[in-house]
Amino acid sequence: MFTLTTDNDRLLLASADLRAEIYLYGGLLNRYEIRRPDGTWFNIVKAYDTPQHARESLTEWFRSGKLSPYACRLRHGKYSFDGKAYQCGKFKLAEHAAHGLMYDREFTLVNSHADGQSAEVEIRADYAQDDSGYPFPFSLTVRYRLSADGLSIRSTVRNQGATAMPLADGWHPYFTLGGKTDDWSLEIDSSKRLGFDADLVPDGSMIDDTRFQTTSSLVGIELDNSFVLARSKPAACTLSGNGLTLSIYPDASYPYLQIFTPSTRDTIAIENLSGAPDCFNNGLGLIKLDAGEEAAFETRYHIAANRP
Image 1 (cartoon, rainbow, N blue to C red):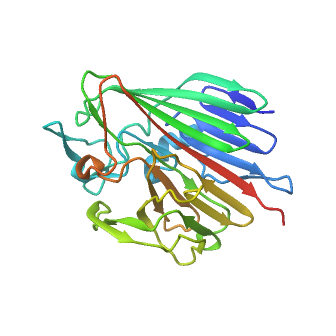
Image 2 (cartoon, helix red, strand yellow):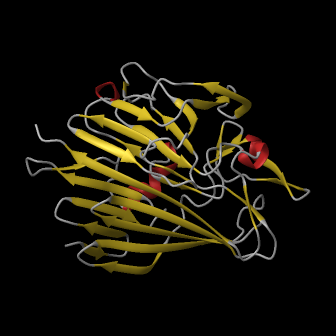
Image 3 (cartoon, rainbow, N blue to C red):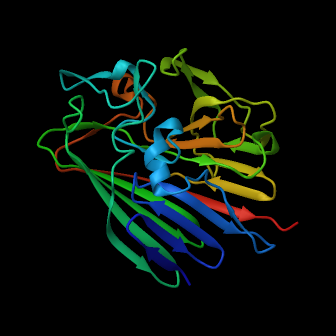
């Protein structure tokens, strides 16, 4: 049996062995927990203490941040679309706009349901043209669904304006399996990654990288790269260690996987992206969403605990 609990700030989806906590602030996933064979619970998401903690500190690392309508870096915050030049300025890393415009929105619960097969919630936030560099109104609806297959997250963007809009979508979760990154292994369904310049903006090159086509240790490995998914295996990515396995199953709407290992060496960011960093300029995965049209993006997280 699956259950659903809500309050003014948080939504909790649960079964006997899985739990997911969603904050209405940012629409973010704060906890995704599994009951281990010894009966204890383990959260694989690097969590905030409270919704207020998220409000105060999200922009430090953008943990679990929603990336929309662009993902990662936008070079100097500038782009051109349909013959017009724009500049976004909400948040910058160095000189570059980063991580979109929706990560700090307050979402509203619009639908919920729980039964013997699943529990799900649908939340929504509207973008009201409050950054002059992105004058395109849209709605963002996120559906979280917990079932025996794991946690699926579906984002739907609807163009509420009278003209086309540029779009990319993504998520910025940080995962942990306990201990340090060196204790874990990673497999990615990819043999290529985007070449980056010194500011982590794609430079137009493509680099062969087969290190993670089979399960490989993360001992001493530092990553801040965007991998191009091959879609040759059921899971796009598998992270394993300490008796836990996280498998990530994006659909075709998320062809890129950004991986980042922070210097703390206790988490790893695994980011599903519909478009490459700076796609408003380089066109890699850029969506031109016409007036009144929708675009949907979906991924699924599955966690398993191995018996000792």
